[in-house]
Amino acid sequence: MPSSPTVGDLAGFSIQQEAALSVCEARKDAAVSVLDAINAMLKRVAETPRRRWLGIF
Amino acid sequence: MIPFVYKLGGAALFIACAWLYVTDLRHDRDAARTEAARAQQAERTATAQAGLNTSASQAVEAAQSRALTITVKASELSHAVSVAPGGPEPVPSSVLELWRAGIGELRDEAAASHGAPGSSSPDVAGAVSPSTDAK
Image 1 (cartoon, rainbow over the protein chains, first blue to last red):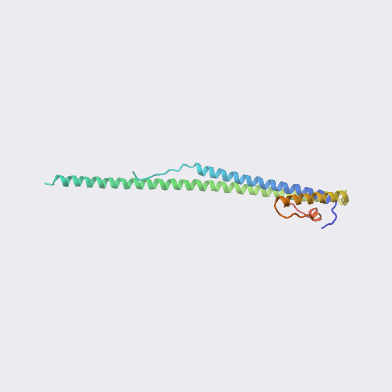
Image 2: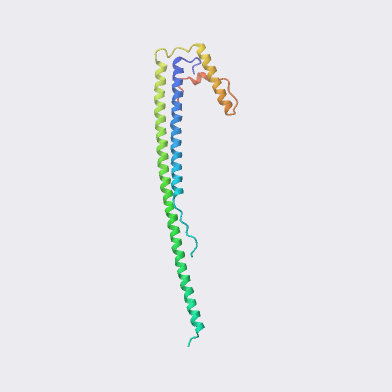
């Protein structure tokens, strides 16, 4: 590990940080998509009409 | 000659048997309907679950692909700037000291907001190592 960073190191570091943020954003988008899909599924299941046949009379 | 009471009893017995039979048929019909409704519900749930699995897989794959692309591109760009003219020159000490202090302050603040003890000595040299990959 270099003890005295160079200008290139700093610039590269900032690029890596930006990339890390973009990756986080991509993963957040995926998580939101999954949550949306879960919500849609729960809604579909809940909307299913439940018929109850009570008693025999 | 059969007494009237017997006739009445026979008729009542017949009616009771018929009623029990009809009741049993109704019960069977209702049970079949309930079972059909339950099967339909299970089928819809399974369909919805399959849709969810597909959506989740697609979302995760898209995110992984995006992350890989970003990481590769960042690595290339990082290498490009490190070897560009002027890149290998050391950072001026005044700039570096301010940079170290700024990073340290930000890290302390982040650690304090998470309730962890702050680290006042940032690993700046490691942080700016060209080999550091975005994860």
